[in-house]
Image 1 (tube, rainbow, N blue to C red):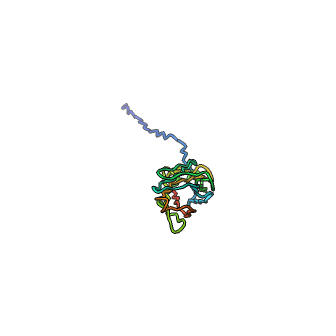
Image 2 (cartoon, rainbow, N blue to C red):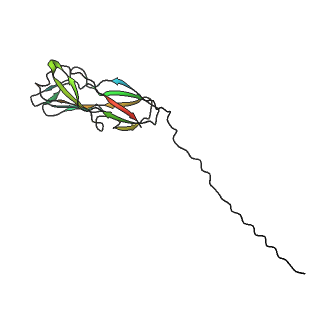
Image 3 (cartoon, helix red, strand yellow):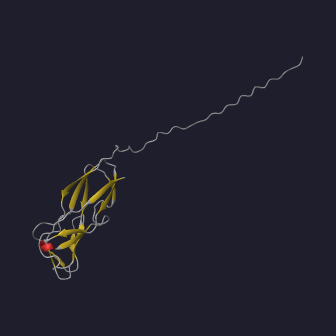
Length: 167
């Protein structure tokens, strides 16, 4: 009797794929909605200016200082920074682009210059993420008065623009 041998070869592969739950930040609604409201205007308060002129600086934390030939007074309207309320979903990334060198008009056709530096004069810096609704943005600035003659005593008025860009 002839014997026949049978070999049974079984081959299999087991592919194990681990299952991980992925968690990501929820996407904001599309289109992203951002609304900005002015809650308080910018006021540098009262000061006097000598012949050499100078600057009045108002920081976002409320500190006011002067340089060169400018002297601060504690009378009249109190100085205060500007406040903007930003309404956006918490977690929205925003960038602020201020307009630099804004002319403020005063008595007898005189002008002074307002500068807003996004890194020093805005409480959030130039780029920030909203954490509440509304998210408060505080803005200071630097007022440049060329001289007492060029910037005579009186009220100076003007507007400035901040552009809030969502990313």
